[in-house]
Image (cartoon, rainbow, N blue to C red; front, side, top):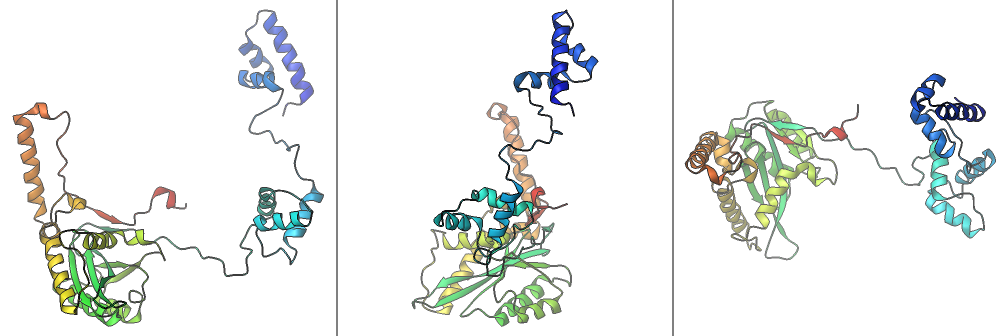
Length: 344
């Protein structure tokens, strides 16, 4: 590190060399510094290199640091954060530092941890990153309310959505939330789709039914793997949540109070028929879930691409670039881990 006295002499020698006709760059090279270093010296006579360790002029003394540590560990303040301690001290005509100063001292002494009396919040692991490359590999399910004609009473729609095709592969309306109802629905789904053990992963949120022992035992017997969202994070189960929004905000078939369980089930059957057979889903290149589930979408998308190419060949001036992308989507991801979430 170049001291202040040597820096002053070097600056004097370089200026003399430049006044004698030497190039400043060469003069700096002779004395062993860079031109940029010399320019920084000329600005404010401060060495700003990153390796330079400088003590701030307003740094706390050791006595002041110990005074802050004594206060924050005092039984009267030990359970409070600095944002509460600083005003409390000010009320007693005491000032030791700002909130940020208290936080900085606590962080430096590794005391910036949970200080309140209640149990600290626990870290939640990211949900499994699941990928579906075909039907009946990954499914998402949930339960939603359907209104009844009696205030305070509801019907409960159980729905299972295949991640790859977006098809509602199993559904039923019941009068209550029950692990037995969910187990019966899953057994019917697995049998009807011909799902083999260890083929399917079933994702859900953390509801009582989803994590109940009855459903857990059923899935174990069927050989179905389980995956759960983080508590209170609806985005971890986004596909089924999106379907429920489509269900409840469709103007052609609005959700109204149902007087009987049969009315609610008739509504659900009509909705599922429309959704699976008629609704062209934007997430799967605007084919229906039934077409995607059966594999018929491959021929449909190829035919659409051909129509666009022939239209472009017929009148190329209408296209400034490529035609619309009708490419088949081979993978669907549930909760993919972003780069910033992965800790190395």
